[in-house]
Image (spheres, rainbow, N blue to C red):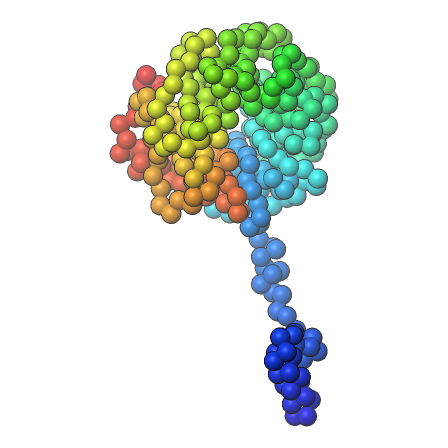
Amino acid sequence: MKKRSMCSALGAAFVAAGGLLLAGCTAQADLSAVAAEAARPVQRYDTTQALASNGKVVVAGTQSGAVLVSADNGRSWKREMLGGSSLIGIAACPDGRFIAVDFFRKVWSSDAAGSAWKSVSIEKPRTPLTISCDAKGRWWVAGTGATLSMSADGGANWTVTDLAEDAQLTGIQMVDDTLGYATGEFGVIAQTKDGGASWTRLSPLPDEFYPYATLFVSGARGWASGIAGQILHTTDGGQTWTRQTNASRAPLYRLFLHEGVPHGVGAGGVVARLEGDIWRNLPYPDAAPVFLGAAVSLPEQHAIIVGGPGGLLRVIGTQAAQASSASPALAAH
């Protein structure tokens, strides 16, 4: 009783003086909630920058170097930290394995379960920004200095192509075994017709267009999204481009195919899809007004997974929205 009275008196005195209670007079902090939060696979500080699926598992890459893997279409996740890394792009290869590009000049690869990650260093581009895997399983990386690199042996050796331009390449995609496109800053666009053995510069995208993302669905048809919600469309393999209306008005940071239809995700929590020649919002409940930096299609689930800041990884059903849309699939064009 005497000890309790003394602590109470001391506490009252310190409160009156605007000070802190003595540590010895307070109960020990309950850190169980903190420990439980730390054990969660998806953390509040996670910013998802890349997503990919091989049809069996989905892999997300974060700014802080965490790899998040889901084997149940995004309902639950497992976490693995790749030390000293920041993952800005992920792609699935034909054999099911994943590759990821690290801002800190590394390329990571895993098995088909999204585990057993290992890295190789990459000398060029100086800062890698995008990655893809072609039908032959070759790795393609592009980035600063208008430089792109290809490895046909799992990163042991690289073939480097310099487009002789002081520009960032933000997109690299092989449409088939021979045809591919690289796009970037100041409207740079290059094409290969021989599987990457040589690259030819095409006429730049109009007005030095800066493409956040590009998507080619054939040798002729492609889209590029850029600043202030601009979207360009080509039907002749990048020789000419025309503007398309983006009714969402949001910049789209990633473009991808979902159930045969081009989709994009971007600023303000926007998920957009192409309907005819117009990009429109795909409505979904409780949309958070944050940027979406990544997305991946789950066609068998009629859903997509989107990722962004604040530990955002969300599954969005699209079946009802698609059924109410008059947008035809690409195959019907």
